[in-house]
Image (cartoon, rainbow, N blue to C red; front, side):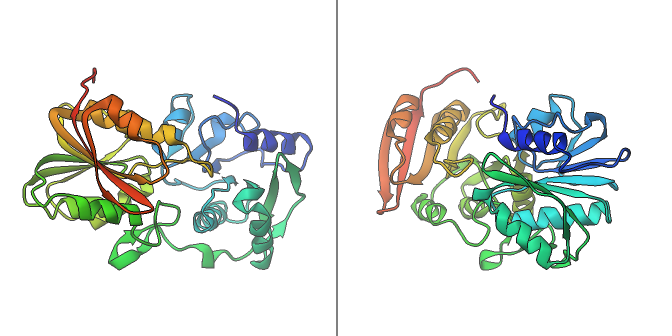
Length: 334
């Protein structure tokens, strides 16, 4: 796996004495991603805060202390700036509160808004240390300031009364693709259902409106989104799994799988991620199971569907989305 350049930039910032850490005490690291180079940081003092399951597992398997929410006090913190502005603000506010005046090192790409983020920190009264620029990004230290306005809490009321959180997919409204898929689901949907990439639970609430559904398993890699889903889906038939949908294992085959799979992890589209979801669906379905999938119109999923299923048809859609029904999965080893 290639080294993430933000980790390399952080290492160079330490080498150039642009940033520094206290000699003792815990160091909280917010938002490290798989492949990130953390070699500049003292491993035995780190607490990594990462709620995305694949990234969490990556560091856990390499012996790091990894949690989904910060625990205890820290002498310093490192914040790797995410793409979502609201999430970045929340992470920095948490880091400032956790360190209580200790240094907070911020690292991010220009494409993720690091320049405006730095300016906003100054507006809130933070003292900005020397700035190190490298590889289309910046690293700087922030001390002090009042970031209480950035503390929005773990969740907030989002679309139509649903609970969502900063940084989760479609936090500000019901995803249009999911709405198209929900409308296309048959009223007689029944049996054991899985929602792969369940997000904050919108599709699961629609699935559970069908009285023939005996169970609905929500599989989601984003811990914050799954926490929201637990609040949004109040039904004894619901079961929640924090897991990577492409690697999820289950003892029994599902009768139905419903999904609006993600197709990017960064800014560029990655259709391979959606194809991995399709392959996982075929693996998890019972021999007579059915997949219901929505995708952006431009995504080339037809070939992957035909490879994994014997019976594929496009049910409905519009200029933006297409909904598929795929049955008779090509069974492979679980």
